[in-house]
Amino acid sequence: QQPVQSPQAVILREGEDAVINCSSSKALYSVHWYRQKHGEAPVFLMILLKGGEQKGHDKISASFNEKKQQSSLYLTASQLSYSGTYFCGTEIGAGGTSYGKLTFGQGTILTVHP
Amino acid sequence: GAGVSQSPRYKVTKRGQDVALRCDPISGHVSLYWYRQALGQGPEFLTYFNYEAQQDKSGLPNDRFSAERPEGSISTLTIQRTEQRDSAMYRCASSPQQVGYTFGSGTRLTVV
Image (cartoon, rainbow over all chains, first blue to last red; front, side, top):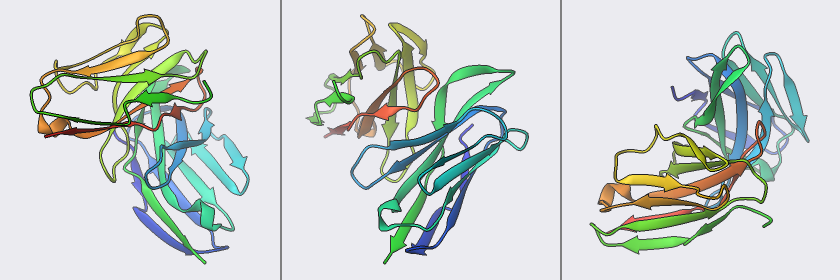
């Protein structure tokens, strides 16, 4: 049931773009995205509740393709502060019903260099 | 409080001892979750509560693990007869419903 994230790691220079993908084998009710810096707690970035929904937060945005059971996180014009491990968390459900808990992917390590 | 508070931050215990990990969620948050996170891995679900009701405990590894949230606020995760394989970062999170989780700083448990 654990969603699969790709790639496992990304190395960027400041100003470059990146895409992180999250795929599930089950029908999804929602997808969450979190960023965790070394030694700190995961921090919530955004939640996508509806198929086709797209959201943005500063220069970080995400999309949710309900039919394909996948979500993508887009980081544009990356900054040094974007470095960290990104996790998607998926909530299983169908027909507008949530089954409650989040299951997290294994993470994508993003490193931004000057 | 302003955030999710967990105590203790660090706990070293001898194998076979019982430990109790405490979580104080953000005031008014309906849902409270317990996760365990190994180094370099994503958080692994243990159990969660809505108010005082335990909704799902399917992630608890075995019957040595239990959790409660008696008054719908503070929660305690108890591990009985600890084993070395229980060593991990234990994280609590809370949320209003259908919004993102706020995670606490975690309790680093080491069983020696």
